[in-house]
Image 1 (cartoon, one colour):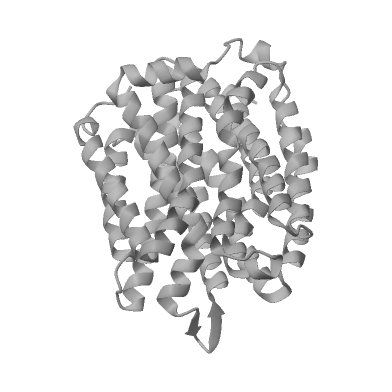
Image 2: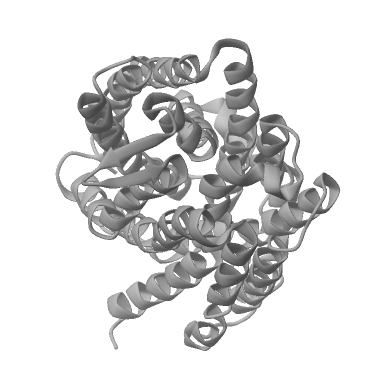
Length: 404
């Protein structure tokens, strides 16, 4: 097997393991806002806290895990993440009470940090300027298969079987990642693979010194706040408001949870080919800077449409466009972070990027449900539109720069 094929296999295996671990977490974003009362939660504010706490805990954990990967092998880190993924997903079916839910979500936050930082370090290590976008797209596209199964299956199974049974089924599904651990390419310990001792403080210094680097990191944080934070935690509620909770189609009556799972599943179903395609276009033709600027502008338009009371077919079409824009933005942000880190800063800069991305994702649900309580869900999505418009305007001066 040549070096390129070996590198590609490394990313594919890593992505598929991540997908299996992600299923239970993705299921929560669809099922929990609809079924929270049967789990003992008293308000949607508690749901927002539970969906945000796993991201909040990653803020102090990311620097620690960055140092941990300089001392342990990639395989060891992934094994720990898989074990925690199985444990936490199974526990969702039996937990009652806010304290225990917060504890479980903190453990999942630790697991996801191992997977997320491991993937960023891996892409930085094995990619070149000609493959950086395609590798980022390949990883993002494949690991989101877990979100496809979790969100579509989670909405459907929770509506049909109840939340607890749904969680147990997904916990058993996560256990399927155990055999895949043996397919991870073997390597030495972390200090042999990555002798660099990363520092978040060094990453912040590098970020502050260069305007483009700062904007690249802020782009990732804004995308995470809107897509991972707001959209992932409120989509079922948004659909419930715009469809009055039910949609009749072809003689079927579909609940908001099932509908949200379906529309999220559409995105994850095209990610395995659309995300790599976006990465290849960024590598070879248009450049990641120009595509990122265009995607922010498009996102501002479609989020503005989602905040309006349009005829339902037009509103659903805007929802589909939003999902396509989300695929492009996520891939391009990671590509830009890897490209920037390769020019200077390396793993330290990627740790800073991951930290601010997690910060955006953590505060997204809290901001969303706070604005929803005060102004309504449509104002939440108008806020998202404004965030993307601001980033498009700020990024415009860099859009015409050439590739590295």
